[in-house]
Length: 143
Image 1 (cartoon, rainbow, N blue to C red):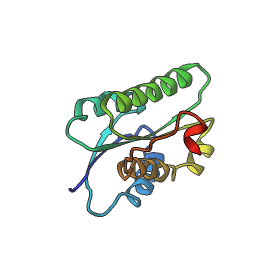
Image 2 (image 1 turned 30 degrees about the horizontal axis):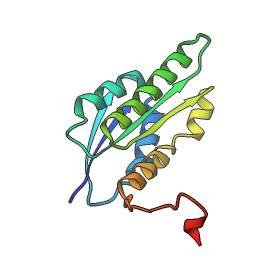
Image 3 (image 1 turned 180 degrees about the vertical axis):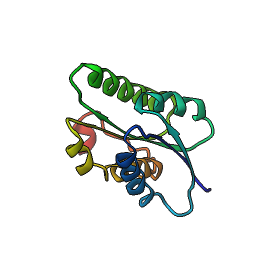
């Protein structure tokens, strides 16, 4: 069956967002249906995924947060990471976290291919095969 991916990209830093998206798209299987939604920043990514959680098989959260001189960086980074993890676990659907957190624009430019890593993680979860493995409770059962 054809898988459906939703990519939600915070494009506050347009050049970085483009790099994240380009690298992510290279690893999505050809037979996949893809929708891309752009939001102003990474803080809006989790709610956008939440609104669409039942319509897609997998999600990619892409964006960039760059540290400034206030604690805003810490709040936004932690809140979006926690929300993405909570959504993934609660809904049992893979959400690749391709939100990069950087100390400066130079770091962000060097990391803009990290969208591929988030895609690879999602692809891996979607392809998992589950097997029941019985493990002996005592060493006697091993003999």
